[in-house]
Amino acid sequence: MTDDKEGIYKYLRTEKKFPLMWCPGCGNGVVLGSMLRAIDAIGLDKDQVAVVSGIGCSGRASTYVDFNTLHTTHGRALTFATGLKLARPEMTVLVVMGDGDALAIGGNHFIHSARRNMDITAIIYNNYIYGMTGGQFSPTTPLGMVASTARAGNIEASFDIVKLAGAAGASFVARGTTFQVDQLDELMEKAIRKKGFSVVDAITQCPPIYGRYNRLGSATDMLKWQEEHALEVEEAGGLSEEELKGKFLTGVFVDEEKPEYCEEYARLVSRVQEKGEG
Ligand SMILES: Cc1ncc(C[n+]2csc(CCOP(=O)(O)OP(=O)(O)O)c2C)c(N)n1
Ligand code: SF4
Image (cartoon, rainbow, N blue to C red; front, side, top):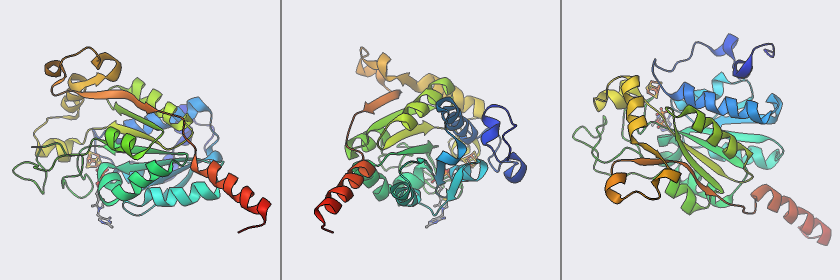
């Protein structure tokens, strides 16, 4: 056990699983740090938390953290998490996925998880590309951007994770960036505290793949891009279409109270048992 470590370091498997495989300048460590600071702020016990991830650079997150962890198959993290949460509803279940993992191969699971509204937090490390496999375009790659499978520019319209998750029924939907770390910490905490399916779209930089294909410069340049293009949703209200052009919004977009699946399931079981049906 490593409980003598300070701050969020107590949640990391530094002796066993480090150094990280993430590239220098990758934003994944920032997103992971936000998740850990949120867990620390809430005061969750390590044994109370499960982190489930899929496959991709982002999927490595579950390897580095000292909770109950499951590194599952590509696109199926939410399915494993669903079973886990139903069997152990008292646990805090966090799911880490890349944009490809969550929305391409895992897209069906994503929308149905949002619809079902189980108390799970889905954290999408959104670097706009398939990082681990060398830069194929993903469902969030913006129009016109270059990928290994779109050398002349992507012509597919991209998903807006916030709109998709909200329309599918998620109880809580937020977007943050690796540049605005304090905001990302706050969003992560709110998402984890929320009873119901919560989603954090975490915009993060991938300098050697997405950055290189699109000539976006260094990690610092990519963070500056985030600074220049992100706008907090509260500030967007009075702005014209022209002023909003090229910007993306951050903050909380959905925060609603809805029946949570595990509670509904428990109610159903006792109702059936009381009637002696089943
Ligand atoms: C069933 C299956 N199909 C394809 C792959 C190959 N594969 C591994 S990671 C990945 C995509 C990773 O992109 P993303 O989910 O966006 O995560 P990132 O690496 O950018 O964090 C793919 C296609 C796989 N491992 N399993
Ligand atoms: S390829 Fe991109 S997403 Fe993967 S570790 Fe490197 S910087 Fe991060």
